[in-house]
Amino acid sequence: MIDAQFEPAISAAGLKKSYGEKVVLDGIDLNVAEGTIFSLLGPNGAGKTTAVQILSTLIPADAGTARISGHDLARDAEGVRRSIGVTGQFSAVDNLLTAEENLILMADLQHLGRDEGRRRAAELLARFDLTEASKKPVSTFSGGMRRKLDLAMTLVSRPRVIFLDEPTTGLDPRSRRTMWDLIRDLVADGVTIFLTTQYLEEADQLADRIAVLDQGKLVAEGTAEELKRRIPGGHIRVRFKSAEELEAAAHLFGSVASSDEDLTLQIPSDGSFPALRAVMDTLESASVDAEALTVHTPDLDDVFFALTGRPKAEATSELEGVS
Image (cartoon, rainbow, N blue to C red):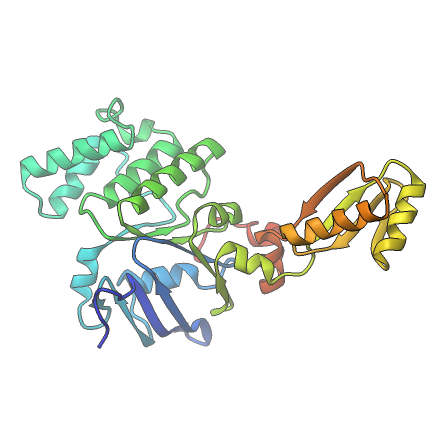
């Protein structure tokens, strides 16, 4: 029996889902610690949204088990629903209502009392900086304001686990960063976030752990730094003032890439401080002066391409549709 004190906020084993002959999820396992951000990455059609739909009780799995906040997905779906909130790819707000009315409607659907519902609406309007716009129809809102309201509506019931399915798609950079700050604040309050995104920078900035889903299978999982370290290509680039210094340095480091045009050496490296210091010590001991030195390490774009066989640009060419 699992000790509830140490039980993950989200756990799944062997989740499978097919539509006809199309296998969407092929036996995935997940463990998400409480009070953390877990990001699921993958190209369109990888199964990200399907995973969210299963874990949030919207559709059944064909096989496998899962527990959310201590509730068994198959045997206690109602308990799961009481524990979670879901913000989908597209805003679920009512354009004909005001922001305040949308929140009060959600409070009514959650069976909160009239006074409690109004208090909760006021709290969330203030938290999301929407108080001044609370009486305006949502049809007049910008995309960023709509997404903030959408997330606020998810929080009416005070869920401990929130599924965010590509929550910042289509937002401008400022609105996206505002959403990031709101997500961080939620986690600081102990909320667990399950995030799907096609913005790799978003996962890099927010996620405590990242899993990469491709063709229905989890092909990698770890922190952003752990995933980056799996990918070759890190190097230290050293620039020199003269061709003579470049040639002397090239002899020191053996078979490394060099460029006579910009007087640089590209030395394979993991980007760590000891590796950087070793390069500097080698140059200093040979009295070779470097003009500049920069460290280049793989980013999540490189990870995505290496693990899925697709560059980010291809994977994000379509930002809508089922993932």
